[in-house]
View 1 (cartoon, one colour):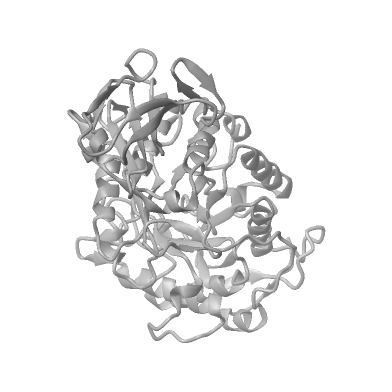
View 2 (tube, rainbow, N blue to C red; view 1 turned 90 degrees about the vertical axis):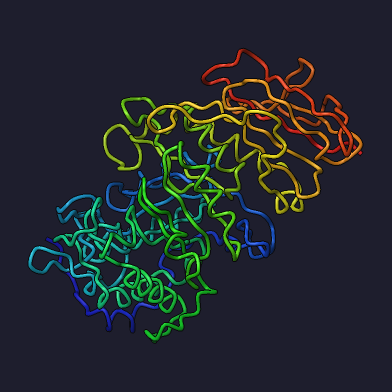
Length: 491
């Protein structure tokens, strides 16, 4: 068994100030755009998050596996991963692949105020390389591959009790007295990691009837921000300008905005819902003031519900939520998120491979166009469609978004049924019209197909007084035949 130097959290805060232990390629940090709708880099350039759910990467993968996973996802154009800092899925005290525990164990439970740390960080020396060094390796390797990391300091079961009721359980280790201190420690431990975005919650509601955990999460957020800033003042006056923080809610329950939209620490909202609820949840957040970005942080996973969720379900929930006002999307795969079993093979599942086309589409516009995009269902004349099935696992929805000036519009056809578009709501005098195939990322117009839309177009009259126009996607209407219609201003 490895020897360990066990420090109290206060001593750790004094000696661990986030000093870099392994070099990482710097990333341009992220912030919220001035209109409160998107994430942008600190230099003002737009950023569209395409995240992958990798909850258990910190404890279930070794260094080589971490590197291989990130390199593979980089080739597939993912630019963000979501992970949990500490083992979280049952009552077992799970060590990582190296046999390391994150905290001292007291009375059969982790003590979050006593992280297990060692002097040094040499991965070849078992007495130096501790649990937190390995988590730092994940974060740094992500950065060197161009990834931002959405880091949950804990899964919700360690903070807010049981999943369905919020009932107090033996799994809770972070209560209000510990929340600030643990948040401060982990924020300070990774304070120099410019690719980290913090995510509280962890698949839990903040309120269950009389059970109210809001203050615990407030204190955790304050501790993280003070830790990142290297100060120690639990007075409710943390400087949240140095962090990006959101909240991961549970499914079939209120989302982050219900409790924290007006909290100083919440920079953007996150939803977790099934497809039948996702558009309504995004719309609810989008209409709130002050404006804060929102996105689908956890939706239906590929292979979920006995293979009911396949690549089509992954596509339509992603495109629909983005076009409804989301600033990005998170992909999930039932065989990947826990990082056990044959997870490597599933990295090439169809839905996984097709996500890059959404990123390519959304980043094909100018900075001005990217930041001016708004949802607009008034472009649709006639039935907008619905999601069918218990969770909304089938869709004939038509979802529209456009530039604020009407200089471009995108309309997602979930199953290829035709619909009329109000061309009068777009800029005059004409639009280039193209069909985008979400399955292969290719463009089509007038029977021609290309990897670029710049080589051809079909010109459509537009502007005030122009009649609505019927658009019929290629192929036969039906499940899986989804298309995006792009209308782009022709001067």
